[in-house]
Length: 161
Image (cartoon, rainbow, N blue to C red; front, side, top):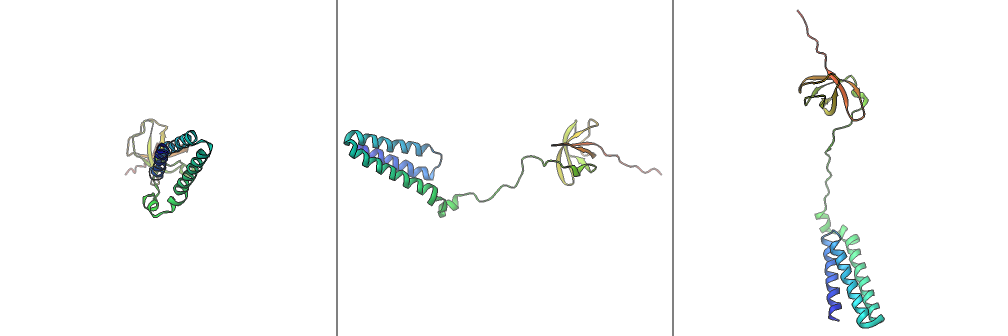
């Protein structure tokens, strides 16, 4: 009887700990401990005692799952520990659209022949059709592909006196 109670106590403890420390491992070990207690009860007390132990194990597991998935997410503790803010940043540059064609911009990095160009305050991956373009040089968008823009050095007008 002591072994059954110890296995059930370990199982209940691990299932309760699983509610606080998610990950699944503690819950699986706790469930296996409860199953071990049920198997020992069947062995020592026959079908009647094993059935009572099985019913108790199922009841404990159902209560633990109800606490973890229904009550705990609504609790004040879960609200305090949950993340509520969202990350608004982007890890990739924006995809260029056709409206950029004909726009002028500035090479942020050296285009040799690819690099980063800033047009209308946004940065895009660019490909230089005319070879090397130094960082800081003005560029003009000649075409837009799916994920990058094609640029050439901008024609600067010089006034002669």
